[in-house]
Image 1 (cartoon, rainbow, N blue to C red):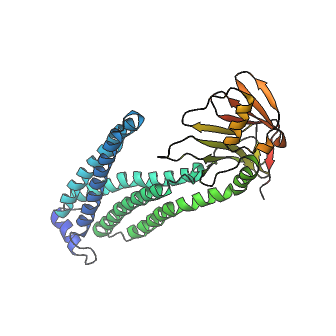
Image 2 (tube, one colour):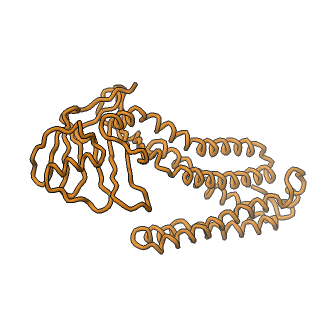
Image 3 (cartoon, helix red, strand yellow):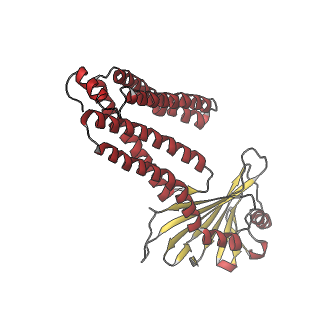
Length: 340
């Protein structure tokens, strides 16, 4: 940090032609406007969400106190630091460096953790990539602004040229975290391509407009000689704003060196909207056909209490359909799909 009184600090700034006297202060002003703008946008969005009531309203209320108010406080502190930098205050320089290290470091850590978590547990293909990418890019931009200010002050006040080399490393890291997101989603979708194709050809008929998402849980380890992880494929026909019944399927498989393996519970069907009332095995069979199960693959009926069980002989399994809709695909023995 700078040593000496305010005149010495001003002389240090002015003696370096590569650093305009008020350049770093204007950089801090830009950062302040960005923070305050984010706080204002957050208040508007949270207020809109609160107007919806129920759980969404609670989320909006939490967002105001957890996100928007801290942003407002940070913006006010940043504004005070900007004024101090324009006055070339030694305390202002110290405050700016502390602010950049604490706030910028926290945001940088959040960017790294968020991108890494998406790679390990991402719900790929869910349609939120533009929002996720934009949010991460803005956060990375804030980190780079704070890092530029810190490097500028270190270089101007202490003559530490290595500060810009450290900033270059930070810039590469933040850029990598942003670029990593679409690459992780592409990799996750391609990883489960064989599994998706098998489900579409052998287990259910997938509507052309169905939304297909892949959840790869790299931390969900299971007992296997070669290790492995768990993959989940969601097929959903629900469309927001479109009336009428819809359904979705969730298939879960374990993946290791041998490929994918469905265990006892291979898939679960979910009925959206008002559930049907199923009162016979024939209605249960019709319901299974309606939610995409090929009619030619359904076997005999097996009576059960408050449920209807229909065999799936081609894969050694059975469907259990409840009286209020929904279905579960059970397997007698594990079903292995080679990873070709």
